[in-house]
Length: 379
Image (cartoon, rainbow, N blue to C red):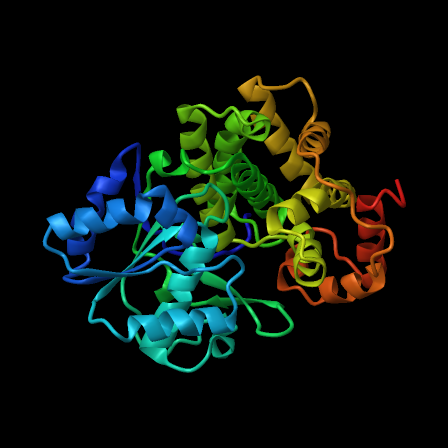
């Protein structure tokens, strides 16, 4: 008999090229009459923010924008967004950008409606009052934040990542318009793409995997695996961008209904301590974590299912493990510095929430070994 589980709701997904044009209808469908838009400087430079604001203006929906979201938003960053929002009257929030913009918008929503500081919401279900309806419009195919009820916010000072979640923080609508990812630089597309791939793989084998999350994870993997080789090589087609965007959103749904694992648990300290960007960090750790997990029958079975999906696509003759290793090598990420303090990183990794759901339990020494392998100290 399958193990008991309870699925979580999902946003309404609006997918397809040019679907940004449905933003005003989505706002009105949520009862919105005025909008606060959260974005970032890169999205503003690409023209996507102005496009969204024009659509809202043409539909008679007043809108104000905050375009100062930063990568790996901190508590202070979210407070700045909240302060900017206080100057306006609105009843709907729209987030357009990468995962950091979406997380900043969710965090702003917490602070505006429930008060306090973001550390008050570290964990799940700590918002006592309703939140404003949120429409998420990703411009990267990576985090899957558009289909999750969590905001990842870094503590001021330590840069420890806090997962701040609540069912009321889940976007009501996610608009997935692959045209918005066409302006993404190659480096950003690569980093967000390997992040999405890691989400699909880790959620497929974590201890909280269930029939709902597994369906999302395997379908996410199918879409991402069909396209990511060309993303890594810097030559994605319009179809590839569509596959990546939909795959990232489905991987987000898989996480929302399950969890992640040791690749993320070991990656987060690399970002906090060494400043290694998240996509590179998870991709660096993923092949070593997969080899570590493969001794567990349940994880091996999950990898086998993904391997079957990969072979069905006809994109490679390699096994899943070998394909992942080759893909990461083609990203040309530097190996970890052998002089890094692996013991300190491992201590941090053992405290990461995602690691608790890895299919094979890890102790401090296990994380040290993983870091050594990623630094080519140990093979």
